Image (cartoon, rainbow over all chains, first blue to last red):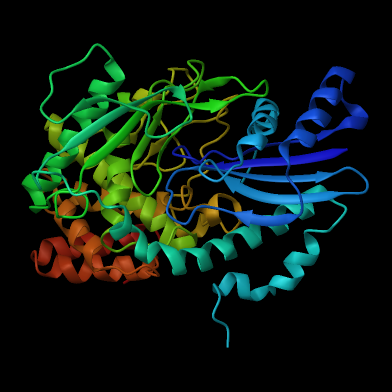
Length: 99
Length: 353
């Protein structure tokens, strides 16, 4: 499974991201990632950004597990509660990147 | 006829939709970002125009009225009411900061521009502090952010490693409340250049609240936004530098390099951050500082008034050139020196009026 994550916006406007590939991760992290992806309930492709929020963090998440593909965008005010732990994990691994 | 954003029109939406199915995660992420911004424009057009009136809560007294809540280290807004207008200080420092700085921002708009709160009709200033995020184990952790959700302010306490309490900074509080003012005035669409202007005005009035409160003159003023919310480190001085955009942090392991351009020649054209709303705001920010420095005295007296009148006059789709033209037009009514200073400032950042 491959997961690509980018965070942008927020008051600070920082752009950070990571790409996690279960083929090259430690086994404990593979288990965590797969569990959090399943629990997130994320599916399909779409963008769900609040029209009225300002300075909310935005998240782009792309998941490819061979069969199923997910490509979604949310912000802090629209991210489903079930997906928050997954975003928590991805944020932990995200590093500053060029926008 | 093309009725979408011009940039989005270059690549038809069905191509982006196809790219979201690409086997390359990077390509998919880029395609999604493009679709996201296009969808945001459509949604904004349809909804935002109606939002301010839907959400405005008129204060019982139709004058300064603050309500500060604590989210109790959860993500749930607003949380429990911790201090309301007229009540004495409480033990919670964050609650008092949100209360005091919202009051300073109210007073700034009232005394300088005779504006009665965000909607100019006494809207209640509602803030929540101690707002939390969720970590990978499902536990609540302090949020590394402050935002305006269309109805109220939300402030995190920061992780203590990079960010501290977002209520520590008067210019951050002024910035968030100015987003509220904007939703009742020009209502600049939060995407691309209009979005960068939205961020620009929030930075301008956020920092002017602080300069006004502290009596800082333009020539010697500090133009760094959000210095107090960062844990000090040699690689960071603040979140944005309005005088020298792109220099607030450099080589920082957690923040990276400040991406703000200080001139149109360095304009960010990518899709992140809703096409760079917090990035390209560096360009008009510098134009404002150059204007204020050329006019000397207090930045809020002449430059601030020109920018406030401009904020009232712009429309949701206004771009940098529209903002520049409007500031010059309004500056004309403030005298020849003001007009000259404003034109010269925009020229220095690559925008000729």
